Length: 94
Image (cartoon, rainbow, N blue to C red; front, side, top):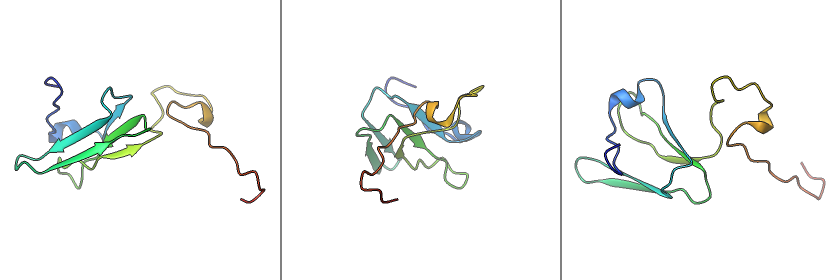
């Protein structure tokens, strides 16, 4: 990071997508060298990913909830960081 700026490079995506967990900012802005930009507002989500598209450092931002297990995690699915439990329907419908 250079202040509030992260320069996206192929090396950043060498192992997988970038995952920003609990970012302090509630929005992220991706700016191309041409000046074209995409801004993503996180709303109530706790994380955001920038995914390498077809081997290019082109961010495809998306708000997300839930992500890969932390290294060494052995607990139950419901206990994973980032998981949210949804209330069931009360009318008995699936």
